[in-house]
Image (cartoon, rainbow, N blue to C red):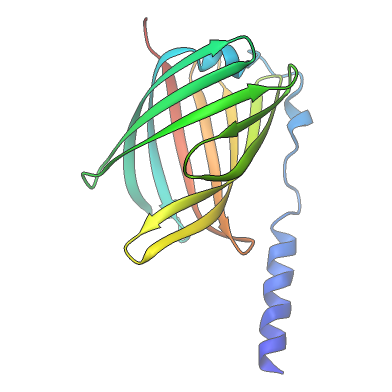
Amino acid sequence: MQKRKFIFALAAVAGLSGCGSQVLEDYADGKPELDLRDYLNGPLTASGIFFDRAGRAELHFVVDMEGSWQGNTGILAEQFRYSDGRTDERVWALRFQDSERFTGTADDVVGEAQGMQTGNAATMTYRLRIPREDGEIVVSMEDWFYLQDDGTLINKTKMRKYGLTVGELVIAFRKQPE
C-alpha cells in the first residue's frame, strides 16, 4: 500500500511538472529572428554552468565550437573544457527539413534529436548518454535557445530521468570573428 502511494505521488509530481510549460509558438514574433543555420556558422564560444537537482552550481565549462553549413546540412564541432580539468568533444550533424524543423545526431546522442525554431527561439529534445564511473546513464534533454538583441544566444536545458529533473544547464553562446 505504501509503495502504491509513493508511485501515485511521483506520477502526480511528474504530471504537474508539465503544467504551464512554454511552447515555441509563444516566441514566433520575437526579435531578433534566430536562424540556427546562420548563428551556428563559423567560430563560436560558449560558457556554461551545470546545476544539480538541488539547484547548486556543480560544474562550470567553456566550449569552443566551429560550425559549417552547406544549404540545410551542417556540422557543429564542440570542444569542452570543464572546471574539474576534464575535456570532451561532441560533433553534431544537423539537418533542416524546412525553415523551422531540424534533426541532429551525435555519437553520445541516442537516436535522433528533434528541433524547431521560430522567431527568436528554438528548442531541441534528445536523449544523451553521460559516462559515469560505473558505466553510463541516459537522460532526456530539453534545450531552449533564446537570441538576445546583443547577439548572445542563451541556452537553458532541463535534464530528466524517469520524468524527474536531475539537473539543468545554462549556457551563453557568442559568435567569434572569423
